[in-house]
Amino acid sequence: MNMDFSTLGQVPEKVSAYFSLWMREIDWTLFIISLGWVTFGLVLAAGVYALGRRLIYQALSRFLALFFTDHIGPEGRRLAARLALFFSFCVIYSTFSHVPMGMASLRDLAESIVWLVLVASAVATLFSLLDLSLKIYSFSSIASEIPLKGVVQVVKIVALFLAGLSLIASIL
Image 1 (cartoon, rainbow, N blue to C red):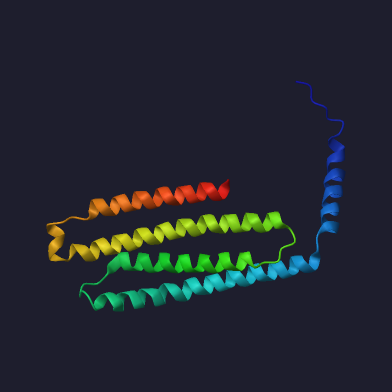
Image 2 (cartoon, helix red, strand yellow; image 1 turned 60 degrees about the horizontal axis):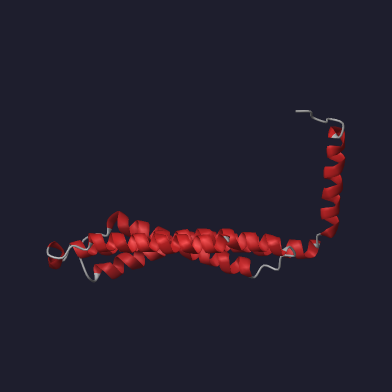
């Protein structure tokens, strides 16, 4: 295999030319506004997650205390954390959709990435909700006669299948 190293010295000049062309074509005011929106969305999402996780757990534990006396344990904490994460990704997704980015491909890429994480977070939240529901159901007297663990597993498989279809559709 013959390699031509004669143009190797021109690489930095070509990179510099492409970079300067890109720098001239960008609308800097629009870029700064877009960067501000994205930063605002990320800070807002972090706040929603930090506050939401505790508030959702407290509300969930008080609501479930009305129906049964046992402590909800790690399933409740997991559900609260995943629900707060889902809400924070909803905030990020809605913020990114309103960002006036000059480059449409960059906005589409950002929205696609956030959509993928949003779907994954929604599925994880659904799984936690199903696990907590199964734990609550296990305390009832009917649970020994009618087990629902198989039904919950089928629902999880269907949810994974639908999430996979949604992710593939958003990529294509």
